[in-house]
Length: 463
Image (cartoon, rainbow, N blue to C red; front, top):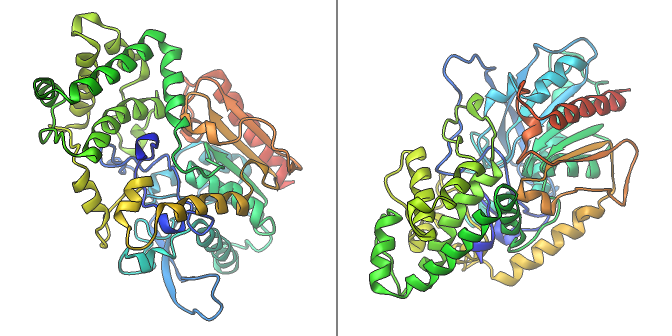
């Protein structure tokens, strides 16, 4: 069930969930509650387009092309310097990354040309004029990697600077971090190194362990916090079958529509929606995202656990509802939608703008195309194609935060088939993709040291 999953802002090519379509978490696609945008007053590079990107890289008889958006910043470039390529994931590319972030400092240190490439089917990089199932067969990680290889050839050949002999280092976070690792693994003759932040590397249908990670992180703040969340959930399940209690929950959880006791999927959505409150806080705990224009990410694990352990707020259910109200108010929303049919209806839209589909939701949205068995089979195919944690790779740095639940399907120790200069870093105090953010004086010491190690690895790769 999707209740066991937590992924913001994704169009998931369910029928091609394998290497033919493994689309996973991206740190900067926050869904409807957390919208990234460029802050006012920040001067950014203009957008550019690779006019002749191939639609289907694996059909030699297909000569259809499309325009892929990218951005360039040459302020850090020195003659004969390397090419640093930021891979974007399943959201519109945000050009604010062209002037900030840890990679900007790496580029300054190594005299690199900074380039960011938008992922096919997101933002302005639209290979087709719709998102029907026929079109979405071209949405896959394999196609995305081939896009990168083609783009690197293009920019080395035709950009104004002499880049033909330049080495290439790719960067990415979340799903884009996965792409960075896979790019180095599958195209080692195209890229010379990869820095991947919080990259999921194992495809799993129903990632139930995600919420184990959420629970463990909340327990690190307060064991009573986790215990009270469980008590609240158990009590809410009992109340769901009682008309008078459902009326109470309608009010305290500020539902947009009353609970439909006869809908099993509404029941699923009800519990998932409120579990998401805690998952969101844990995944982005203490990340300062104001440089991206995101101002509603100031609720921390300490905040929600303070509420869950405050007996003056009533029983655990009322405290659970108080957490929901805090996030509603933070987001500027009036009520919480728990209606499953409305979600599936939105996922069935074939125009640009639908934004997520997972697990059972994905199957319901595309039920005429595939069944659940195919999604599961495609997850297994993804792991066979890329290798999961057994992938052959060299010249990579993989960074995860122990607070981030995604680290549970990423690399946190030695990679058995890795070689050359590589390192896996697990930061005990950080959450999702913290190492990518602009360095701050308040950063934990281990985060500062990790960035220094990353830069040293890059220097080694560049020779």
